[in-house]
Length: 461
Image: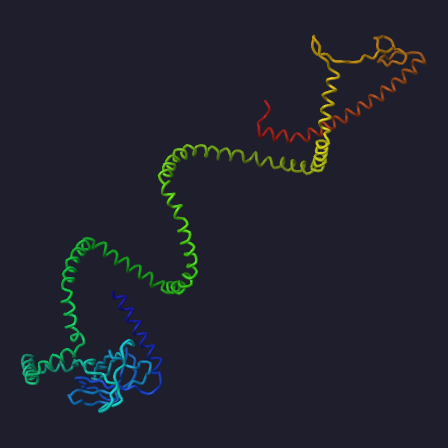
């Protein structure tokens, strides 16, 4: 509370300093107010008139009314503080220790009408502020004067003189007392309001006891709350600039948030049936999650083993990178042949050549094979010539592996047969070399495939 009061005081002082710094300003014709006081002693012409601590004018004149009251003419030079309204108030206050006075005014609220203007008589043309809206407190030095003699004597003198001066004027004294302090003037109204609310006050007292009893039991927690609130306020004061910046950015954030909240409201409206269905199935979902716990516990071991297996298989998988590159190269090189082969097989399938080839094979096999009561047999054709029979000596026109000498005719035939045999052997060796080369190529090509298959399905049994 003291912190809040201090902040409010600083704000008021800053506002007063800013107002003083800006000067009287406003311009325009002076605004005159004829204020009636019960006592205007020590107020002199030329003293300041202030509003909220800022000088706005001065005392233009002093006079006495027919009722022996002080009439003070106030000249307001700053048009920003005019006009005065019907609920305006003014009070004469001490300005320094040497007895200087100034008039402190409150121009009232804009909702109230303006002060009435004096049409004729003293102060004609000025705005009239009645004595019921002014006050002039007794100065401290006058109060101190009673100590010049023994207090009892001075007090008796004051009471005697007061009784003499106020004889038969009790109503006037009551009115003066009420005007002496605005708080006293409003005391009757406060008492009337309290009297009309006596039942509510009695209930408040009863309920406050019920509320304050538990609060007293938690006074330590309440004290801790106050301490923590003080800590929070201190931290907030340290970040006052950031908080101020956040408040400045809040309107823009709210403007951007408004469409999103509208969409969120639409989503909530559309999601209400879904939420109702979820509420209906909440029990089943709860059972499902409950039963899922044992499964998750059992699966934990499997997942751990799976992680270990993945860690062990990391190196073999890395080692397959060269094989994958070779397979990629093989696939790239085989792409033209595979494309041609695809076109060939598509053409064969489209023209029915594959079916005809299969029919050829089927009927060819059927033509060369037979079946009778004894079983299957193979049809063959025997070629019989002079070279068919077994011979231990070379025969003319027949080839043999014998190296014995022979006649010139036999030698010529033998030489011709040897050349034919040599030519056939060379052709056979060429075919064999070609086959071996193809086998080497196949082995070179199939070796990576065999390693890949061996890694994927294990070594052959």
